[in-house]
Length: 176
Ligand SMILES: [Zn+2]
Picture 1 (cartoon, rainbow, N blue to C red):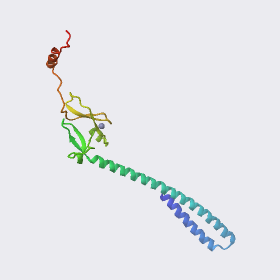
Picture 2: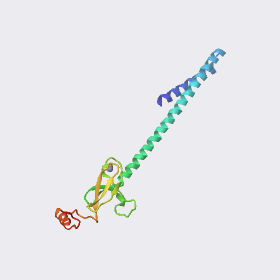
Picture 3: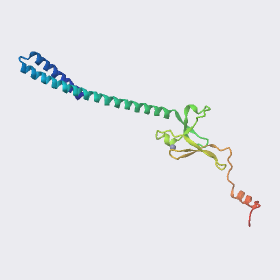
Picture 4: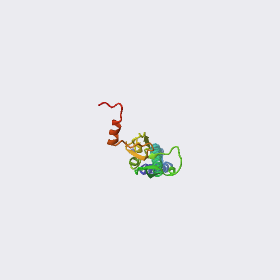
């Protein structure tokens, strides 16, 4: 950029010197030679200006794209900072939106701690809980990690061996 500006300035200086030569010229031959040189200098100056304009335009685009990247990075940072660590009923640590923890919100969700540490918000999706699942579970579709949440209110502990044997003994369909 500075090279182009300095080339333009020296072309202007030469053109001004040539204008002076034209006005001081003592004869037609000298004047025509200076006019020819002046035209050559002006053409060179036009080319320099064109190159300068192209350079400015490409630098403007670069600044614009850097500004956009910066804005996206700031937005991502703000989004990450809106989450806080949350301890589930089962004692695991996951992330949740800071301001929504104590509020009823239809969009309330938890975020994956593994993905969070990779600077990425991945919403944890609930998995269906069966009656033998002691805790409700959540899964990250991004990294496939799963987490236990709060206790499953419909939980039924699996039968002990004795209970199973007793149940089997009382089974009318049992075939000996
Ligand atoms: Zn994840």
